[in-house]
Image (cartoon, rainbow, N blue to C red):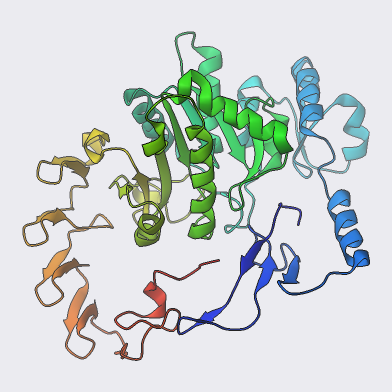
Length: 425
């Protein structure tokens, strides 16, 4: 489809396949966003294939990346009064194009500072399952950059993290002694208006697809392999509605590109990674990356009603950093209430108290959890042990028997909502 190779899906019930397998868009979960659908065993006619190819050709971006680079060079030469950005088309305008956009809303006097912060110039895309439209708050972005620098990294593969990329690019252009460099991989092609071809690759993280073909793939490979692959880290912030299995597959392929370096010892290593995702996906991430662990740091977003820091957000952010780095080296800001647990050898939030029975700081959401002797684990403070369900749950929950097994995988002991096999492609 327009977003690259489709993925093969199957519906399951009680651990068994149900119905025919089918191909669908890797990134769009909603058919209204991408109509691509094909049964696995379906024989597609030549006419339908030709129609599909024609549709894809007709829906390509108006300008190529290289054309956008040339347009940007011409745009920055314009005097400030002639710098316009069409808000309807989300496009930098050259004077010869003003006439075609005369009935559109546009931004005038686009400054150099605005050009260096395209994530604030562009409208966030609305599909939460396809686009990472929630952008890091300045506080979280600065923390990540400071942490990356303190850990000694000099190159950042920014996968779906445009705000981190732009703060690195901005500092690199303004500060002579700033040594960190970034390459942005993102599904949002609008960023090609602001970055050169060695700074941005149009990329779908759900199917590891480089829209720019082999040239873009080689740009990424060269970036990863500089300095024998040393001092590079991947930082990724996927859309929260995305399939974990598909994301993990792509990240492993990016790690494999990094392993292609001639540096000895890489064969048994993983590329250092920060995967930023909600804590309730912990079991799914660890299923694919057992070496990862979850940090307590709460990542905040500027344009999310819930996941903001302080009083403007309605609750604490559930978004965390998953990493394959040693937890003890991830120093969290003490001024924000984080402290070091000497037993766990990692920084934890102020409310995350060490449980002697679990021998761990067990809280996932920042609140102090309590230990249930019957469940033999710590649970949320609002939960109570239910003798009917033989597990902890909210006091006013509806008792449900799970003896029949999970609706998804068929195994006993858990329900569909917490099945580790949920959302598999």
